Length: 324
Image (cartoon, rainbow, N blue to C red; front, side):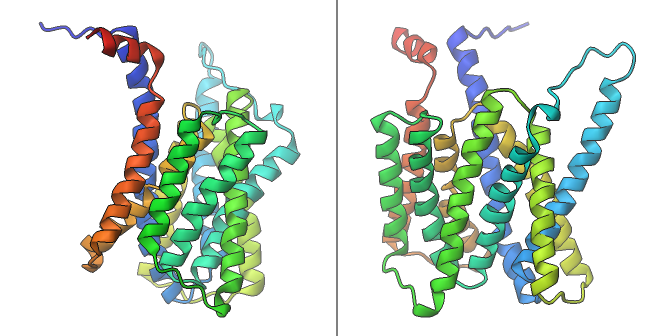
C-alpha cells in the first residue's frame, strides 16, 4: 500500500489552507445572498425585517445544535469539554451582536435597498478594508507588515477601477451613510471576534449563535416597528429559510471558525473576493457583459487576495520549498 508522508511544513500548510478554503466558500454563499435579497426586496420585504428573520432563524437552529452537543458531552464517560460562555461578560455579547449583525448586516441591507448594487459593493469593499486596517493598527496589531498594506491598497484600487465612473446622486446620501456605518460595524466585529478567539474565551458555535440572536432580535424589532410586512407566499418563505439556514447559520459558523486561524486583515481581504464572485454569478444568472477594464479589475482584486495568502505561508513550508 502506498503511504503518503507529510513533513511538518506541509502539515502546517494544509492546516492553514483548510480555514482559507472555508472562508472562500463562505464568500461564495454570501455572494448568492445578493440575488436572494433583491427578490425579497421586490416582494415588499423590508431590509430590517429580512435580516432580522434571517438571523433569528439561523440563531435558533445553531442554539438547538449547541444544546444537543452540550447534552451529548455531559453524558457519563464523555471527556469532551468546551469553554464556557460565562467567561465573556454580557456587555461583550451585546457588543458582538450589535456590531456584527445589527450594524454590519442590517445597515448594509438598508443601504442596499436605497443604492445601486454596484455602489454598495464599491463602498463595502473599500470601506471595510480601510476601516479594518485602521482598527487592527490600534487593537490586534497583526497586520503590521508593509505587504498587507500594499495588498489592501492594490485591492481598493482594483475595486475603484471596476466601478469607474462612480456616481452618487444626492438622493443616495442616506444609503451611503448606512453602508459606511455598516463598514464600522463589520470591522469592529471582526476585530473583537478575533480577540475573543485568540484568548480562547468562547467557541465558534457560541460566537455565532449568541450574537446572531441578539442582532436578529434588534433588527426584527426595528422591522416590525417601521416596515410593512408583506404576505408570505411559498417562494418568499423558502428564500427567507434559505437565507437563515444556509447563508446565515452555516455560513456564519464557518466564517467564525476560520477566524481562529486567519487574521482579521486576512478575513477582510478574502471577503472582497465577493466582487469577482458576484460578477461571475451575474454573467451566469443574468447574462451580463463586462468590459475589459472590469475583468482586469477583477483580476487585480483576486491577485491581491491570493498574494496576501501566499505571503503568509508558514515559515516551515518556505524553508522546505527552498530545500526542494
